[in-house]
Image (cartoon, rainbow, N blue to C red; front, side, top):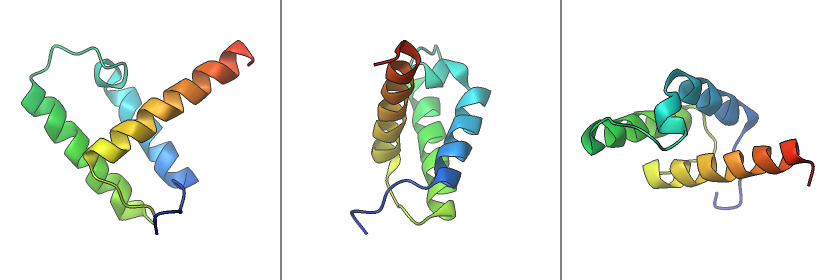
Length: 78
């Protein structure tokens, strides 16, 4: 399972969830760290339910960070 990539459905769901919480998506929030941690745990549970790739909250944070970098490079045209 380690080599499986994040599914299109997981990426779409992640983007939809992040659009509801742009402050967390941009990693600039005034919410308490407990609330942010609960958000990431909930996001991980929702994305893992879609499958097949399973990650913990930290793993999904990394996916989001990598995805943002990919989109920024694409916009810039690199």
